Image (cartoon, rainbow, N blue to C red; front, side, top):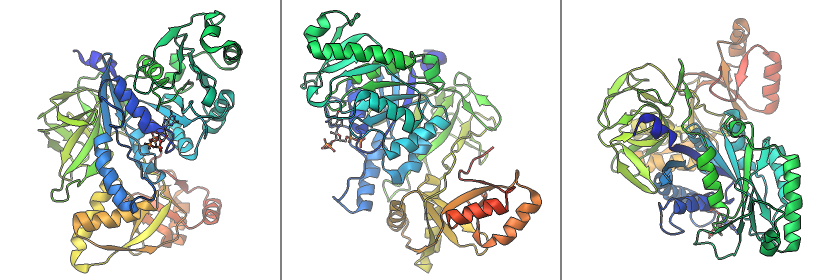
Amino acid sequence: MSLQKEINRRRTFGIISHPDAGKTTLTEKLLLFGGAIQEAGAVKSNKIKKGATSDFMEIERQRGISVATSVLAFEYNGTKINILDTPGHKDFAEDTFRTLTAVDSVIVVIDVAKGVEEQTEKLVEVCRMRNIPIIVFVNKLDREGKDAFELLDEIEQKLNLRVTPLSFPIGMGYDFKGIYNIWEKNINLFSGDSRKNIEETIEISNLEDNELDNLVGNQAASTLREEIELTSGIYPTFSKEEYLNGALQPVFFGSALNNFGVRELLDCFVKIAPTPRPKESTIRLVKPDEPNFTGFVFKIHANMDPKHRDRLAFIKIVSGVFERNKPYLHVRNGKKMKFSSPNAFFAEKKQIVDKSYPGDIVGLHDTGNFKIGDTLTEGENLLYKGIPSFSPEHFKYINNADPMKSKQLEKGIDQLMDEGVAQLFTLELNGRKVIGTVGALQFEVIQYRLEHEYGATCRYENLNVYKACWVDINKSNHDELIEFKRIKAKFLAKDKRGQLVFFADSNFTLQMTQQKFPNVKLHFVSEFD
Ligand code: G4P
C-alpha cells in the first residue's frame, strides 16, 4: 500500500474525561467493535482507586497496566485506529497534556448527570489552544441526568465550545427509549439488554412518519419531533471543515456500558476524524506524506523490571515510513541510532514491526538516550515543538538521605525527570535542588521509585512556592532584567533545560513583581514564542 493510502486510513486520537465519566468503558466498547477484544472487562482501568491500597502501591500496579494500555490499536472496516491512553487522575495531568501533543483528535466523555467537570475543563482548554478537533460523547443516558439542551448549553459555556448535536436522546434514565441519529437519520431503540450485542438500527428518513409513534409511543415521538426541530433552529449545521479546524464540535449521546450509541459514534468518527496532521518543527512545517521519516518522543516508560534498566520510549510518527534496523538521527545529541526491535501495539499486545506509518506509535527500547520531546529524523536537523512544561503546583527541596548513595540519587532523579514524572529546578543562589509536581502523589512516587529502582533514599523539605514562572530573557528589557535578577536573586532557579525560572511565593508577590518589572516577560509555560 502506498504511503498516502496508509496515511489516509489512520486515525490517532485520545479519549479524555473526568475520572468515572466512562473513558475506560467507552474504550473497551470501541475495541469490541473492532474485534480487537472478545469480551467486556478486558481493558483494565488505569485509574487510581481510592482506599484499597496505599497510593504508591496502587501507582505501581497502575504503571503496569498503563504500559499495556498506553496505545490501543485496532482495525475497523479498513481503518487503522490508534487510541492513546490519557490518565484521568489530576495528579497525572501533565502526562495527559503531553499525550495530547501526539493525538490528531480527541473524544471527550461527559457524564450526563454530572455534566462538565473540572478535569474535563482543563483538558479541553489544552485541546482548544491547539485547535485539536473534538467530538463530545455524553454518556450514561440510561441514568437520570440533565436535560439534553441544558447540557449542550453547559458544554458550550464551560468548555467554550461551539457544539452541534449529531444524535439526540429519546427520553432518559427510566424513560430512556433510544437515540435518534441526526447524522444518519435513523433510530436505535434501547432494550437494556444490548450490553453484549451490537444493537439494530431502524431507518427513519422522515420523522413525521407514523412509524416513529409505533416505535417509541405518541408522547415520546412528538417530543422528539419538537426537539429535533429546535436543534436545527439553534445549532449550526455540521460542517466537517469547521470540525477539523477546531471551530465546531459535534455531540453524540449514548451509554457506553450498554454499548448504546457507540457504533454511531465510531462510524461517524472514522468518516470525519482527521488523518495524521502536519506538525510544526523549529525550522518548518512537516507534512505526513513526506518520504523521509520523522517522529518525536511523547512518553517514556521506565524500569518496569527493576533488575533491568529497561525503558520504552513512545514515538509518534509524523512523516515518512519508520523502518526497523534503519539508522536514524537523534537530533538533540547528534547520534545515529538503529532499532532492532521496535514495538507496535495491537489492542493490548506488543509486537515487533518492520514498518510503521504516520499516526502510528512505536515503542523503542532505550537505555537512557531519550527524553520527552526528543526528535528522530533521517538526518535533517529539525526539532518538534509543542511539549511544554506547565508550572507545577507543589514544590519541595529534595535532599540526599544517604551520602554513600549520592550518585544513585543523581542518576535516579535525572532519569525520572527525563520520563516526565516531575520537574527539577536548581536554585541559582546555592545550587539546591527543588522538585516541582502537578500533584502531591508524585512526591511519594519519586521517593518510592528512587528507593526501589535506584537504591537511593531522599528526604523532602518544604518550600513555599506559589508558581514557577519562566522568564523570557530575549523579550525582556535588558536593564530591567538585570535589576529583577538582583532583587529577586533568592527566588531564581534554572530548569532542566537551563531556562531561567522565577519562584513566586504568592499570588500577591507575583502581581507586585509584574507591576514593578512590567518589561520582564514571565510565563506559566516553558515554551513561548
Ligand atoms: P473512567 O475510565 O472515565 O474513570 O470511567 P469508567 O469507564 O471506569 O466508568 C466509571 C463507572 O461508570 C463504572 O462503574 C462504569 O461501569 C460506569 N459506567 C460507564 N458507562 C456507563 C453507562 O453508560 N451507564 C451507567 N449506568 N454506568 C456507566 P463502577 O461501578 O465505578 O465500576 P465497575 O465496577 O462497573 O467497573
